[in-house]
Amino acid sequence: MMDIFDKYAPFASRHEQLLQLGADPFAVRIDELRSATEAVIDGRETILVGTNNYLGLTYDPACIAAAQEALERYGTGTTGSRIANGTYGPHQELEQAFARFLKRRSCMVFSTGYQANLAMIAGLAGPRDVVLIDADSHASIYDACKLSGATIVRFRHNDPADLDRRLTRLGAEGECKLVVVEGLYSMLGDTAPLQAFVEVKKKHGAWLLVDEAHSFGVYGETGRGLAEAEGVEEEVDFVVGTFSKSLGAIGGFGASNHPKFDLLRFCARPYMFTASPSPSSIASVRAALQRIEEDPTLRTRLWANARRLHEGLVGIGLRPCSPVSPVIAVPLPGEIAAARAWNLLRERGVYVNLALPPGTPGSLCLLRASLSAAHSFAQVDVVIERFAAVVAELTEEGAALARTA
Image 1 (cartoon, rainbow, N blue to C red):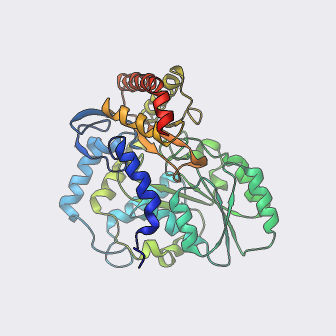
Image 2: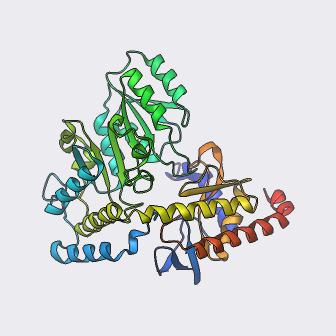
Image 3: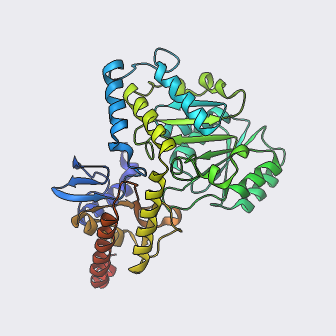
């Protein structure tokens, strides 16, 4: 009889090859956190440059104090879903605060960002609808489409003309057509041309959902996301986001101006059938949202750090995949070289993400960095210096790496 795990044999083989090159990149253990940007990993003082902690709010005193107060007042968890016993005053208050900040009529809070996409997309689209998604969409978007039962159509990444062609071909097929794009794409660090996508969706009478998971708090004059930065918020029908990036916690949100939006509370299974977010997380997010509203220097520092790292990596001969953004991804020539570089950086006290196919666009092998407002220029300069040292070492090992590959 076939073993139920035999289907994963190719992945197991690749994983074993990575282990032969050094540490397991998918099981990094952080022994001690010193701050939003520093940790001890394998006994080494390490600069964290791969955490998505864009605004550095995980150690913000106001956020920590709010979480502690909520923990003492409301306990460790709700032990129930929002439609049972899991709606506390702070849940509704956070939804109201998000609605005000986003300038939306309604907002729903979810237990994770992943569930936010599942609930929003699978709740909005059904078997008689069509969902058109960017080819580079996050796994949660793909999974949401499967859960919806809708017809799924992929269009080329960041290509409004291809979306236009596919909507034209569809014609009257499908009762409703929902277009799904992201604001900032988490692997390559590029952004969606939202103004062009808006024109296409209006031309065809489609609906538009923008996942601002990595762009919320980062883009726009007030931090509402890429739609704000592009001046198209009113044309975006639905917005989704997560608490696990700029807001420094766990959870997610969906928001809209549609007058019937709250029907999703009774129709979206990932909202209805899971425990609601813990009170401490809700409280810390409320405090983080207030910090984003009141302190624009968080974004100023983040972008200064992003420009510094991007320019520094270009200066040592590397070619980031995209223009300056808080996500800076560097391609390497193959899986072996990427894993070797990741290990060399780790040994030098720099943590970045190793991103490999099939989780990357175009089968790229990447070292992915994400900047934080909490990084100092001194830390960024150290990261650049250690990248330079790794580049030099890999250059010397080039022939050996080629033979190994």
